[in-house]
Every structure is written in structure tokens, then in C-alpha cells.
Length: 165
Image (cartoon, rainbow, N blue to C red; front, top):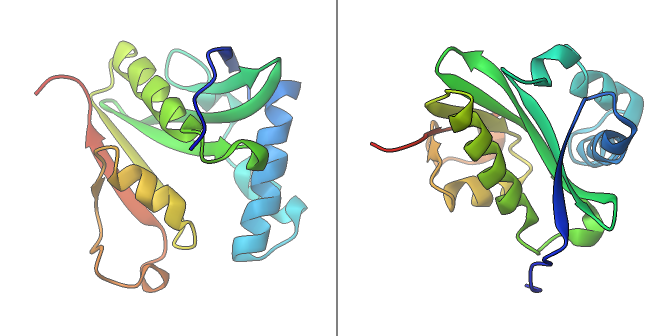
């Protein structure tokens, strides 16, 4: 793993912001490859939530920028009064294995606590073992049997308590 750069900037953006386009374009390509469907079909699925759900105070979409370019990002939206649902954790393919997704998670969790959430919830796909590994190694509790073939489960749900206690 390469050293984490010191010049990363966290930027909050709207889902329709031009800076967020690489995140959604890359997710559409990757999910299409892993699960099937054209990039346009997958993009429609990615955009099924209204944009206002990812805007403060109840949600956020943030990017990590390196030299002005998005290299990683993620979002949360209100799941319920106490729970933020994490969505679209992403790292640009050229910047993987640098700990950026973990950094995005930490920032999303920090902001969720500041917004009054006490828990996070998320689902990831069964064909994303690197995402499953990330959540298992960052304190997320699987809401499924980890001994079962993920392909037989469908979306893999996780939760994590935020803050003290």
C-alpha cells in the first residue's frame, strides 16, 4: 500500500455537481460489469434516490480531491431518525489500495455523528468482496451469515453504532 498523500481535500458536493460525475460514471461501469446491465441502466439505479436526500442536514455527498480531481467519495442519507444509510462508497480505479475508502468512511461517520445520527446502515453487493472486507475491518456488524456464499444472500447488510457507548 502506498503512503497516504497529505494534499487530499474533502469537498461536499451535490449529486448533480460536475465533480461527482466521475464517481457515478465509474460506479455505473463497474456495477454493470459485475452485475450486468448497460451503464445507462445502472446509472438510473444509482440515481433512483432524490438528490435532496444527499444534502445537509439529513445527508451528504463528499469527495476526496487530489490536485482538484475526485479520487474517492461516498454519501449518506437519512434511513431513519437515528440512522444514516451509507451509499456509493467509491475509489477511482487508478487510486485503489491507498486507504481512501477507509478515509471516506471515517469522514462520513464523523459527519453523521455531527448531524445527530447514532447508527449507520448500508448494503453492498455480493460481488464486491473488497467492500465486504472494508466494512468487516472497520467495525461494521454483518446482518447476514458470513459463512454463507454471498451469491445466495443478495445484498449484504451491515450496521455500526456511532459515538460513545
